[in-house]
Length: 83
Image (tube, rainbow, N blue to C red; front, side, top):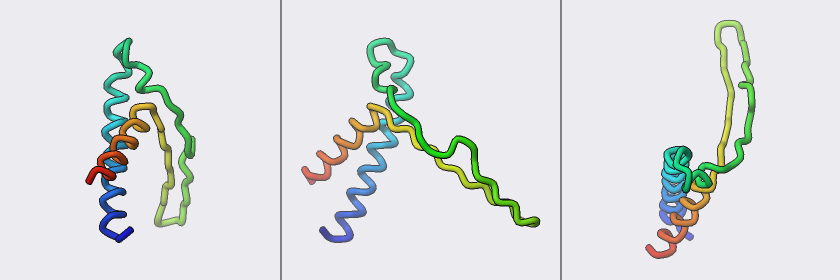
C-alpha cells in the first residue's frame, strides 16, 4: 500500500468517524434512532496539568465511540475499497 492510499484511507476514516458522531448526536433525541447514539466514552476524566512556573500545560483526551461512528467507519472502508 502506497503512502497516498494510506492518507486517503486515514482521511476517509476520520470523516466517517466525525460524520457518524454528528449523526449519532443528532439522532439521540429521536425515539426510533436513539440507538445510534449508544456508545462508550474512555480517556482521561480529569485533565493532567503540568505547571512549570511560567508555563502551564494541560493534557486531556476523551474519545466517545458510538454505533453511528462505527457505521461511519464501515461506510468509509467500503468507499475506500470501491475507489
